[in-house]
Length: 564
Image (cartoon, rainbow, N blue to C red):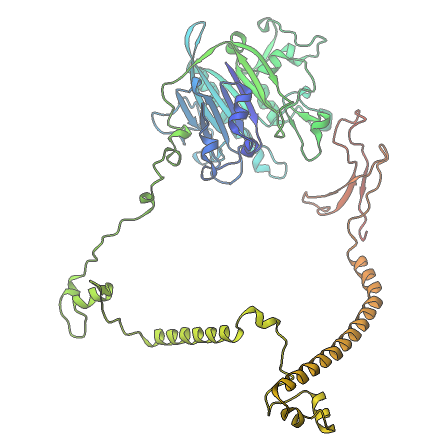
């Protein structure tokens, strides 16, 4: 049996084909976190994957936030599946059960802990050395404690408390338990890229909870020279709870084994990250069935990398999928593909009230009412109801508007009318006005209007066309003269205008060179609330890394001065 956990940072990580990615892991159970999808946005190709059955938990308060999903091969179909840790989201008879003591949390707090879609539980059967046994897999995406929101710190600790309560209760019922996913806390200094840079590293409440939740030996807490040395844990001093960090069980002293990196600083290039993705399991299962555990930093597509575990046991498949499976969702079973589900049935015949059946003075008969409802009966038209004054005004306005539009269309004609020469300044028919230049010529003699009107029509047309050409040439000369003067004035004004806009719109400041690498820096903007919110600064363009790494970002920093 092989199991994989991966924070995918959005279901869009599978945009190139979810089946191809799932098959590449060659795992029986694949648990993903931070799907960032709600039920209304879940599409069929993501929910229904050939060869797998899937189980989702969605955020109910925010869209595009949180969410986990568990994909099981059809050869490893679970017998039970449940959403959430509290049991409030499970249906009777379909839940895994075993909720433990939750009296320390109120009903409102319990509902809030399950309202963000952070847990999916599946229960499987397998054949072990002692015969048939149960294995419960808890897929979790633990909250992050935002330092700017103190209430989220309390929310995270309550989630930890609920997770431990549920896992230990299921373990006490006789089932083996695996808790895996993004826990959002690095346990030991070896799991952090720079623990000295963290204030009160050991006093962090999340790390203290891990100390209480996990079973640890002196081999894991003391510095030893040997690496990957497996010893008999029963002969060493131990502390903590009932679960084991399976990765540290096989690699107790491996350093730089990180699963999460900051994408904003490019820290993955320098392996400057943390190990916050785990596969926890109860001690007996780790010691008897686990073969190996490791991380997969070569798999990209997210700010996290997958973690896998190999077990010697073989899962038994359930003959049918639990009700939580996406195959049973109405939107994917075809029951909502008929339009009749979205339509409301209306009676064909409208019933008339008894008050209307009686003939009253000034009221309509039943026949008239039916005629108004059905104006055309057996191909014969029935008189329409007389419009009111308001309707008459509206209809008159529509008719007037329609007539006006027809007039405008007839006046415009075709597009060719816009390209013909205008004849407003020269009317060919007698008695029409002429242009100013023609009035002067008519007073002088031979070019007068009286002379041209007495000429034949062909001569008049040639004479008028020649005059139009002369007017066009003169107007063109005037326009060219004006445009030349405008161009000259624009050339005169171009210099001062360009200088003005350069002073107003300066553009980004020129980046300085960092002192260590002598390379251009990058411009950043402060987005954290405070006195420096919105200010810009320069830092080294290289990816973030440890101070001892010469290939990593140096400590160059410079504020952008105001006005530059």
